[in-house]
Length: 271
Figure 1: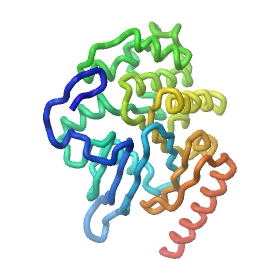
Figure 2: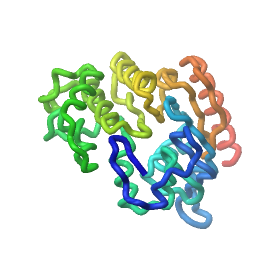
Figure 3: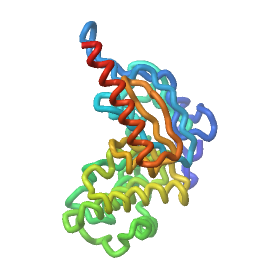
Figure 4: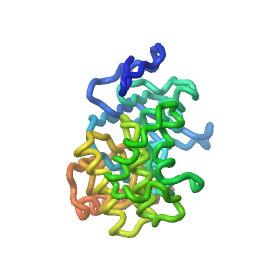
């Protein structure tokens, strides 16, 4: 199997693409349960999902709907109890931990609410960190180009503590894109930002999809953030209840309100 940049991966059937061509993320029958017996909690109750490459998908849902568990299972950060997960055509469900680590370093990008930058490294070094961890040549010209894309070309030598929150999140976006990943997973990426700065960061993710062909999967509670996506998927009780294509913030908020009301009523009735 040949990777980007002409490198070959060691032969291993579990690393070979076997999923549907053109799909960046593919989940089939994914369930995740915690605990045993009467105390079993079903976080995901059977997820089927196929996301094409070059798309921006937002995932929303009421508290406790399974959003975080979905992201962790889809990104290989947690193992599902049952079902299959493929990323970039590669089946990851049965991978050993060292294989998952390699995949996350070289083929996935992550953007978190808390930025997760290393304070002792410069901006440039933070951006190059995924390449360093993956054992790839650290391409400073590529890092400079990425920093230019996020409007931080003049900040390469600064430390994260010298930047604003919005600037730190821009560094995180550049870091997520540096390895040209199959998928960028974003977990509440604007949760710690003001409205104006949040729009700038979301614009960068949108631009990455439209101009770089990136695939973005974002979990958010904010209808205004979700409105930047091509499609919004709504989780309830561990399954996808509905979807909305190119919805406005108002439409997304209305759908969320109806979903929260419905799941709240079910919860009260069950109690």
